[in-house]
Image (cartoon, rainbow, N blue to C red; front, side, top):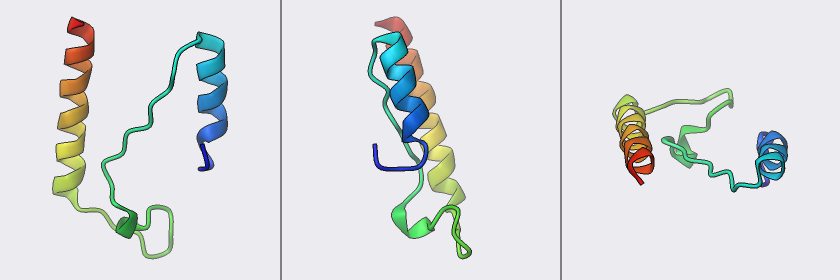
Length: 61
């Protein structure tokens, strides 16, 4: 993982013996954590809804 948050995910994956999946609801042009960051709230809300659906599907599996 090449981002700053990859270290803890690698440790978690190793300790649990399970893959860690990063899912995002932003776009590269949002420039998160930059001085000109922005977000399309519709995209963020739809991303959250998609993740909620994914968790339901995983729980049912």
